Length: 380
Ligand code: PLP
Image 1 (cartoon, protein in one colour):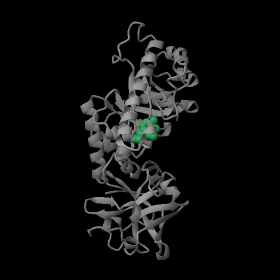
Image 2: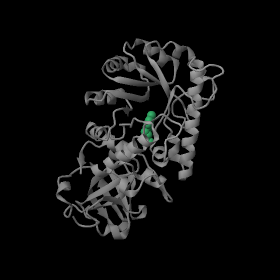
Image 3: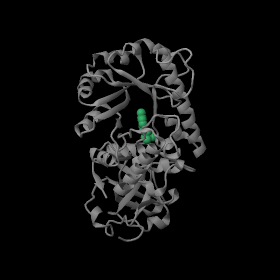
């Protein structure tokens, strides 16, 4: 394989020769290394590893997790839960607040697998009475991201007391959050601080729920003897923390591929980047150092990464013997996208290397949506 600018289709290796549309290319060795590293860290910390499958949402990649010893998974919708249950997974948590309109499918799932469900309001908890088979119930607590979950500072947790006492056959398992606020960090120390604050907030919430539901007596004040579990999951925190202190379960998802956002946050290295979108080059515009690729918001979404001069949707990468490597942002980035169009801004040196008909390998700003949007996949 030629060194460096192997994204020229005439020079591209055979395995890319058939690509004629935006195609998700996954570097299996890198993804498996990312999985093994996270699994080992969870094991060394003595916490349950329940990786989120929403990033790849692909049952074949699910098998790479299974091969690494994973037995419990997280998914983000009832539909995903069914897909993974059909693929043989039998310990599944749906980490999206209960969609009460989906009860028939949820009842069916609860009969087939060990099911965990997330709730943050009384209506949802009361709806669980209609599920005959026991499920694990997790209370969604807002640890600071302000997307979903009960505010642990208000009276919201206390308000769940009665419905939780009426859970019957179901088991109140613990509290859960996604600390998406870690993505706003400016330095690694901020990510560690988000982790510590989130773990402390969730631990406080768990102990409050223990008290409200009679699991903790009035004199039973020792911090550190929690009976309810704390479950967290965000790739920045799970990648940066050397030990998963203060929690019982971790549910990162994005780490299987990583992306430009994670690279910019400093939580992964270039050679951890396991996903790129190979996009055909349709036109080259030398007068403005730009290139038109087939690959727009339909493939990349509008998730952006920041750099000193604004935002971009992905970085142009070279393909080398050991995988792809993003060029510096100024040398090649996805500057603009519309539905199917992507406009790559490149340096004059890179422009000189690009021709109509080549393939541009783009490491996306954020991997999760392209992995769910692009239909054609290639594992290398
Ligand atoms: N848990 C929940 C509830 C999530 O929504 C997400 C991602 O959005 C995750 C875990 C995984 O986080 P990440 O994608 O940062 O790995």
